[in-house]
Each structure stands twice: as C-alpha cells, then as structure tokens.
Length: 249
Image (cartoon, rainbow, N blue to C red; front, side):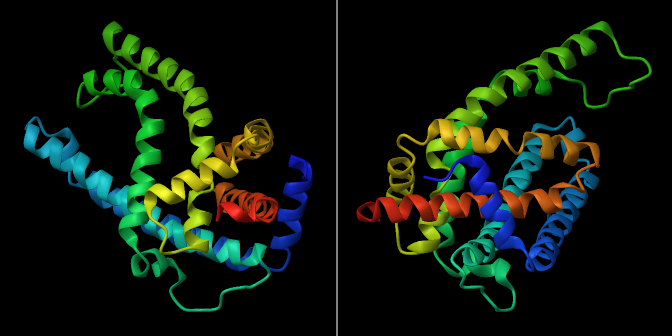
C-alpha cells in the first residue's frame, strides 16, 4: 500500500494540468456558499430575542450546509474522475447529487455531521450562553470566561471528532461508484474499507496540517488549492482499497 507521502505525490501528479479547472470549481462553490451565508447573516434572525426567529435562523443554516454538501459532491465527482483517468466534461457538474438520489447523500452527510458535532456540544453550550452582541472593547469577565471555555472545548473536541470521522470518510466515493447504494450500505462499505487504515489515514490528514495553517494565514484563500489536493488524495486511497478488496463493493 502507498504511504501517505506517496498518496500526496500521486495526487499532485493527477492534478498536473487540471489544477486550474479544479480551483475554478472550488472558487465557484465557495462564492456561492459564502453569498448564501452573508444573506442569511444579514437577516439578523440569529440576533433576535424571539425563539421562533432563532429557530428559523438555525434551520436556514442547516439548509445552507446541506446545499453546500450536495454541491461539494459535484466537485468531488470531478476530482475522482481525474483519479480514475476518466475526466468528466459536462456543464453544471455541481448538480450531480441533485439528480442522483440526493436523499442518500443528505442522510450520509447528516449522520457524519451529527457524529462529529456531538463532541462540540460543550462548546456549543458556551456559544448559546453568549449575549447577542459583544463589545470587544468592553467585555465582562463572564463573557471572557465563556469565550475562553468555548475555545478550549472546541480545540479539545477536534481530536475525537476527527477520529470518529475516519471510518466514514470514503462514503462519497462509494456512492459515486454506486449511485443506487443505500445510505446504510454506503456507510458500512466505507467502514469495512477503512478497517486497519486508521493510522495511515490519520498520518495522511496530519500531512495536510501545515497547508491548512497556511490556508488560515491566507484568510482562507489557500483552501481553494488545498481542497482539490485533499479530495484527490482521498480518491486515490479509495481506489487503492477498492482494488485490494473488490468483493466489498
């Protein structure tokens, strides 16, 4: 099996000559999601003291996240086609998940999101206790304490959230190979493929950490290049495991 360095090297070779279009797709997806988020934030529903408005705000946030996940499938599908050396040439590649059992993609996304989100419950609790508006020049001791606890809980939650997400990290590729697969079967297949691969995948993901830090330092611009690189790497992992264990599909 390929080592993490070899996987990343293979991903870079795959993206040679294709990075421009991959980054353009990522930019389009990012701009669309960002625009929806800005529109949602401009409604000020989250700052309303009315429980109904706050509930509507969180529901709309969930809808935006689901739309983003479905559109991301189109990006992953294009990058996966590069891994298979079968480039997809078609208009509106982002709409693939909307045309092919979107409910299955949504169910798998919600499951994986819930499994990871549960670890952030303490941080979310602190966030909900914060006042609607915060004056950073004059914060009370209670607000500072809540912000400190929220940050600490969020950092601590990242470790288990990443670990529990590893078994399901190939679900999208399973569904792309078999669009008629059920959500349950796709999750189970991903879990079977990942047996014995935890440490290797964790090392692969940790190899992207320096790039992610650079992406944060560039105000998120670097992630326009990092996301295709990451998805192509995971595509090669899936293809390798599928060749080794073809009977599970």
